[in-house]
Structures are given as structure tokens and as C-alpha cells.
Length: 197
Image (cartoon, rainbow, N blue to C red; front, side):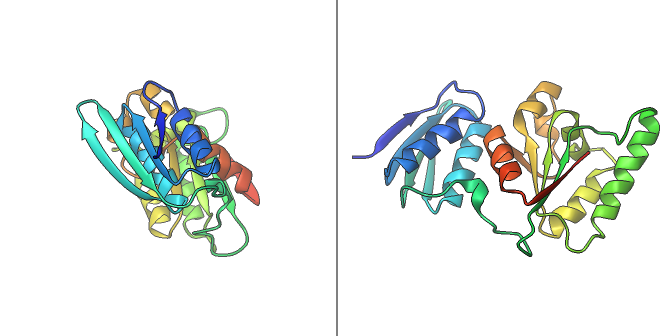
């Protein structure tokens, strides 16, 4: 018989953390219950990264996620998939402008930074957008094209779901993966170097 993880009503990153704990305990069949699409996507992405087979059933407002596969897996943030070399450079953006002073100039600078970053060889391993940084990934922003170029080069872009909810723009994300604090933390801990803007 499998293990049940009831993560309904829990805020990010609790559904992923509880799923991780169930996997670490050695469980090979796990049923996870969540009550929102972001938690569903986060749990599914995490479980897949751990080598689990994932099946999802929607029952009204509840998502029933069935996981099967190996237990006792390493943390997701410790993988090096997607890294062109042993260097795992993470770029962290917590603002939608660069620098202090003029907001207008800051927007010009952050766009130039992202365009220049896309020309760097090799590109960063991952990017993390949180707080006002998530606004860079929203439809209509002139930074979306540069982020799409980076994504096309294999750069994984993690966009904080809690921040998107706070700014009321989760349904307007044009590029990147709506993520959670667990993914963000494990990415930052796995980085060999980071650049924070």
C-alpha cells in the first residue's frame, strides 16, 4: 500500500517538501493531494526530476497525483542537468530595474543586461526571478524577448509563484516556469556561483 501526502491548503513550498520527505523515507508509491494548479505543477516537476512516474487526476477542486518509482532520491537542486560545464552559474533578479536612482534608467539597464547575458558563452545555468523581478517575465514587458532568447539557449528560468500571486499576474507569465521557494532555494544552494541584481 502506498503513502498518502495530504498537502491541500498548504502554502509553497510545503507540498514539494512533504513529497520529498515521503520519497526520502523510501516510499515507492505515493499519492499526493493538492488543491491548486501551481502546487500540482511543482509537485509533478519535482517528482519527475527524482525519476518518478507521475499520473494526475483532477477531481473537482482537488488534484490527485500518483507517484511511482524509486524512493530515497537526492534533492532536486543537486542535479547538474542543463549545465554545459561543471560551472552552475545562477543569475538572481529581485527587481524589475537595475541599480538605484532613476526607475526609467533602471528599466533600460536591466533590458541591456538581459540582452548582453544572452550573448555570454556559456550562458548561465538557471535564472531566479522573485519579488519585483517576476514582472520581467510578464506579457507586454520589453524584457520578455531577452528572457525567451535565454530560455531558448537552455537556461531554466524559475519565476516565484508566491510573488506572481502577490502582484496578481500569474496568468500573464510569458516565459519561465512558475516555481516555488523549495526549487529556488535548492537552485541557489547548488550554484557554484551566483550573480544577484
